[in-house]
Each structure stands twice: as C-alpha cells, then as structure tokens.
Length: 238
Ligand SMILES: *Cc1c(COP(=O)(O)O)cnc(C)c1O
Image (cartoon, rainbow, N blue to C red; front, side, top):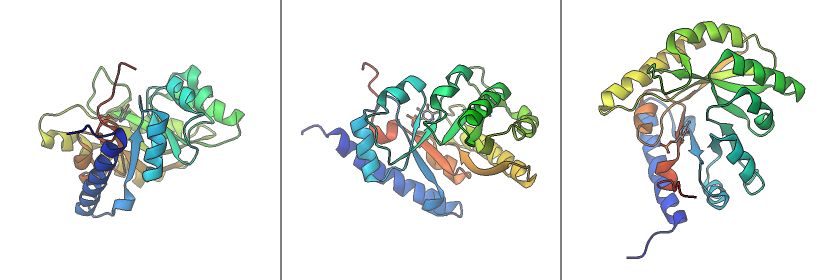
C-alpha cells in the first residue's frame, strides 16, 4: 500500500470533521454554519495551509509570533488569521496588524498593551479572554472567579473590543468530565452576555480541540480549534 499524501490525509480528515461538527451542531439546536472551524497551523507548511484554504478553511490560528511572521509571505491572504497562543506584551506590536482576533488575552496588562498598539494603528482590536477553567498551574488564562471583574475593566479600554471567551479545559479521561468544564464555560458566557456590558459582545465561545471538539460543540462552543486531527501528527523535527 502506498503512503497517503499530506493533502489526501487533510481532505479525508477535513470532511470527517465537518460532518461530525454538523451532527453535534444539530444536536445542540444549531446549524453547521454556526460553528467556526479554525485550523491550528503550528508547524504546518505554507503549502499545506494554502491547500487547506482552497478546500474551504476560512480561519487559521497561530500560536507563535515568530512562526506567524516567518510564514507570512507564503501564506495566502484569503484567510482570516487569529492569534491563539500565549502572547507577551512586548510582542503585541508585531501582530496587531497581522491578525483579526487575539483569542488568548490572559491578563489586564496584556489587554492594555493591545489597546495601546491598536490606538497607534487606529484600529479596534477584537479579543477573546482566555479562561483557565480547570485552575491548572501549567495553563495561562484568567481564573474563573476573576473573569467578571476583569471584563468590567477591560471593556473600558479604548480600541479593544471583547468578542467572547476562549478556554482549554484539562485533559479528561472521562468524556463527562470534559463536558463539565465546557458547560461551566457556556454558563459563564451566557451570564456575561446577559449583563449587556458596553463594548462586550459575547458572540464567540472558542473551545474544543482534536480530542474533544464534538463534546465542545454539543456543550455550546461556537468555534473549535483543530490542528493534529486535520493535518496529521505534527512533525517536531523540522
Ligand atoms: C495547537 C493548538 C490547538 C490545536 O490542538 P490539536 O490538539 O492539535 O488539535 C488549539 N488551540 C491552541 C491554543 C493550540 O495551541
């Protein structure tokens, strides 16, 4: 048997994932179009990224500033770019004009830095606040209990607009445990939305990755971020 090419693997994975997202969306009372499939492209070659976009991927997510910049010239412009990784305040200036959404805002200080740079470029920067929903030491994000007070503060920063929440829940052996975290996030999302805070729109709930995206959609996610399952296992020996 011959080995499948990266593009063949992508096409098979992509159609399977789309189907599963559609089923989960329907089960949760929504349509497939209500769910954004973001392709997490760390270590993926520009050629394969461009192929993915030709097949229908409309949003890609980078988690390293350096990689985003180094691939920039070769990656098509016909795709939305989100930043999804931990971001240092001194790197904000490098991505402010390169992405349409920063999903990983994990401190008031970072939000302030984004506001400053956005003002320099005379743009409103859309952001999501990252929530450390499992209170894990290894993960960044606002503590669950601190999110509401921080939203009040960040919503007052000029040139920044809060569009929703992002979370990476703990890895759970048991799928029900996973849902516990996803549902906790959905409740927070709904509660904040109900407050109708000025400058906060709460229309994006970004949660779910390769191993848990179906559960995430069932629990109300509006955006899943998938890398490994779309592109195949990453090759770290680049
Ligand atoms: C890499 C990454 C993903 C995708 O993870 P996979 O397990 O490869 O699907 C999602 N979100 C963030 C923030 C990532 O860095």
